[in-house]
Length: 266
Image (cartoon, rainbow, N blue to C red; front, side, top):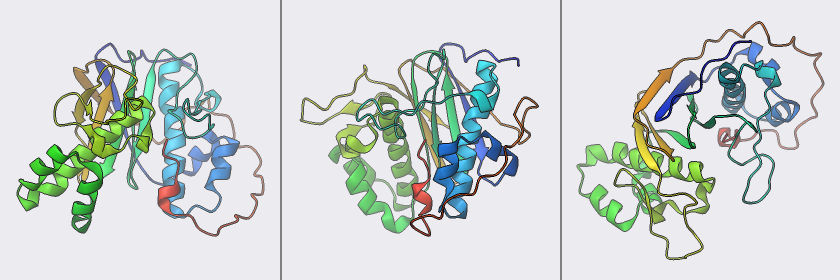
């Protein structure tokens, strides 16, 4: 199977994949992936399936390995949990990050350094003040409150995506309070007074990424990105994907329904 070159230095490939049911893609899921689907509602099922299958399809294009043979390691370097760390392919000469909403999955790939990507949907207007209090530094919040009311939702969303991209790059997730992270400039600044809380790299570079209507997207990278290449993934599976194995009866879920937000973050 042929492979494409990893992105050149200072370039990031961004893949946007619409969330929808693609039955053929289920053959790309691992046993743990399929077990995770048990009990999810319709939207969460489509998000999880789209995210996990798209990651393998995209990585296969760079690595020259059939998508169903790619191993993605999600071990957390902070707590050791096997499922909620930064995803990566051991030994691969690239780094990637994935983010999703109920409608879209975004996968960002770099061939140099590391990347954190975040895509979020516009918040409901009635949530703005609470979200701002939880997410913005005092200086960011004062600047945000000076904006015209019509601009505040989009501005808050831009702050939020830049902050989450940064914490996904570092692997901290929400263990760093977003209100301690200032992203006003082109590189974030951590304001936490606790000296044990610090970013593990020199300050990342932040890059705005055009996003679908009603969304905002951002990248945080360890090297400066000059070029973002926007790519789309076809629905058709490559011929190298193995046939679907015989179906296995899934156990009944202990809880009848899980919220869509419980779909895998990565």
